[in-house]
Length: 200
Image (cartoon, rainbow, N blue to C red; front, side):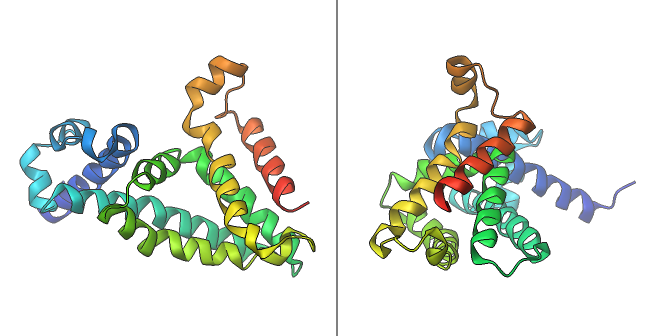
């Protein structure tokens, strides 16, 4: 039998996981704490026990998603045995695409908050997106000798959008093209396409 402390940890984890899905699907405004509690199979009062505000819960959800991305990229690239910056950049791109396929909420959270100029967007940029962007800029030379530095912000958003959108709108893609983006072969094809598109 689990201790009360472990039960509290488990409940908090369920709430965060439920919040990730709710915020990604419905946005901050549309995702009520009542709905999140229902998804987590928890009493609504437990949300305020673990998180003082809805904003604090949203930040915990964002921390979880971006923390997983950072860990996944870090572990994979640490295993890569190559000194070639182009090979390194391509594999970083492939891994980002694979993560986006497994976690379409990443793109949905970025788009939902990216439309605003308010506090949550600024916090997301300062806390998670700036470090990602700075890491991306280190690959600048890998995009080819003719890459103008002024195009790097465009390349970043090409990666963020083209690498993720197909998974975030999976039902649309299946209906429109007959292709299921969740199929492992499709994920790998997409990862290779985006890697070669950005790093010829």
